[in-house]
Image 1 (cartoon, rainbow, N blue to C red):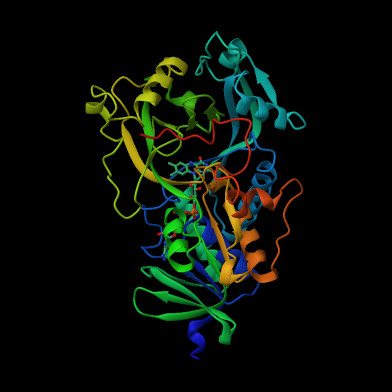
Image 2 (tube, helix red, strand yellow):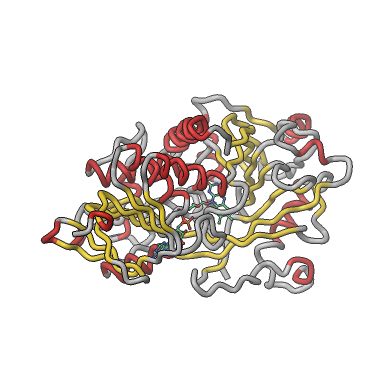
Length: 425
Ligand SMILES: Cc1cc2nc3c(=O)[nH]c(=O)nc-3n(C[C@H](O)[C@H](O)[C@H](O)COP(=O)(O)OP(=O)(O)OC[C@H]3O[C@@H](n4cnc5c(N)ncnc54)[C@H](O)[C@@H]3O)c2cc1C
């Protein structure tokens, strides 16, 4: 067999998860191949653009340890690369105390540094930018260790570091098949170009394409639904621009309830702030309607057309009216895709079936995975190479298993719904 076709590990999909896996594999001295169906850093999946929030606050207690591990891995990769991808900020979560997700966030933050702010103290803290409703016990939770990650720059950083450590990276290479080659003790990977490659192990990090790829190669159904979503940028009111920047200490933020709204300080575009809704519309990743939800100004007059924009307009007019203009719609929008699982939790597991532990699959990052990419990549590399990963205390890998859907299609039990449900039409 030609040794140029044979690898220790082949990683399929070069978004943040696959790129981080390739980085960790190459640091473990594994002969690694990272394959991407489109151009590297393309805007057709989930890991492109200029901002993703990171935060330690979560309703589920098993995510913060992964966020902490990731943060330290982002920082060490930054020093290896010689440039930064993280802009640290505080994190602000807001919600009514009756909201179980928000309440869980507060409970999970109780043993670490945090401040609870009422309507008045929140106004004083951030130049009057946020106005909490009077009713329902709306409260804000401020914590350190928020921040804005630059996603395209992060993916490029992990890919270039992986290459520096010896990984081979090939784009415009769609994987069309994966077969167990028992005689060679390898997994055969077939590409649309007709190549036949071999990996002792394979990692599938195919984002919104994961369900179809896994189903076609193994017949195994993993419940990952592609969802088209939208990032919106809004004009900051004149005279307020300097107050909403990361440099001025403005936080990354989230507002619990329905809709769940999130935002980042003004960082990418001068005088614009990103505020968007967690949610979207189920889609076919290969046949997307790029206009859905993005008919910004015109759609403000058409009910049910701009379902990804209207809720944000309403939220801004209620929570940030003095600082952000919303009546003319967003100044700019950017389409993206979520890969949703029924419970909003990740899938990180061996594929099983005829592949046993030779194929690891990671997907369903459900609109909140970017901040944990480096930790997920490390776990995937260790699962592939050692058969088991060292995970931080408090993380139960059972929460990410494929088997959790076998007897319960809803997956992990949740006492709250805000981060699980996505607005669908
Ligand atoms: C609008 C939006 C906002 C978000 N905000 C946040 C946030 O604030 N904080 C946060 O933590 N997370 C956030 N997320 C989620 C985060 O971005 C995703 O969880 C993460 O990017 C998923 O990465 P991935 O590598 O799984 O998928 P992707 O980035 O989509 O990568 C999968 C790759 O696999 C490739 N591929 C698929 N099939 C094949 C094949 N057959 N052969 C070869 N290649 C293949 C695809 O082309 C793609 O490049 C957000 C997501 C969106 C869309």
